[in-house]
Amino acid sequence: MERFDPYGLLGVPRSASAATIKSAYRMQVQTAHPDRGGDAGRFILIVKAFDLLSDPEARRLYDETGNVDEDAVKSFRRDVAKILADMFDAAVGTAVATGLALDKVDFVREMSAAVRTGLADAQLGLKRMDRDIAALGALGKRIRRQGDGPNICAERLEAQVAAKAAEQAQARRRVLLLETAIVELGNYRSEVELIAALESTP
Image 1 (cartoon, rainbow, N blue to C red):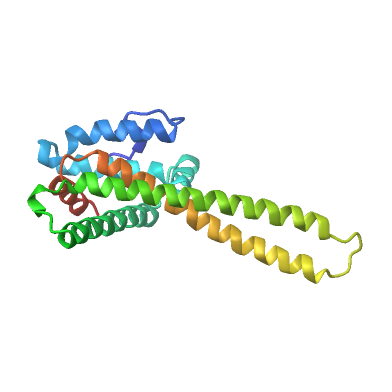
Image 2: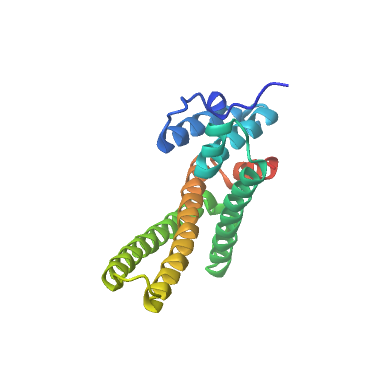
C-alpha cells in the first residue's frame, strides 16, 4: 500500500506556508472534484491532506514522526463541515424569512459573507484575549514576592491566566476552522458542489 504523503498530494514542499498549502489545495480540488470529472478516491485523499496540513498539531506530529492522527484529521473535517452546515442553515433561514426565491439565492456567496463576518469577530476576540493574557502576565510580575512563602494572589492570578490560555487555544482553533471554511467555500461554484464534497469526505 502506498504511504500517505500530504505534501506530495498537494504538490508542496514540507516547508510550505499555510497560504501556499491553501493555494495548492484550491488548485487540486478544481480537477479532483468528482462533479468535475475527477476521481472520488483522489479527491478524498486531497481533502485529507489539506485537513492534516491545516491543523498545526496534526501537521507537527506528521512532520516529526510520519504518523497521521486520523482522529484529529476527522475531527478537523467534522468541525469545518459543521461551520459550513450552520452557515447554510442561517442562509436558508434568512432567505425564507425575507421571502427570497430560493432558486435565485447564491448560497455559497451568502455563506462566504457570513463566514467572513464570523472570522472577523473571532479574530477580534482573539486579539482581546492576547491583550488580556499579556496584562495578566504583567500584573503577575508586579505582585510576586521575593520570599518562598505562599502568595494567594499570585496563585489566583496564575489560575486566571491558565483559564484564559485555554480559552485562547479554543479561539485560535475557531479562527483556523473559519479560515478553512472560507477556503472550502472558494472551491465550489454552487451549494450543490459544496454539499456533495462535504458528503463524500469522511
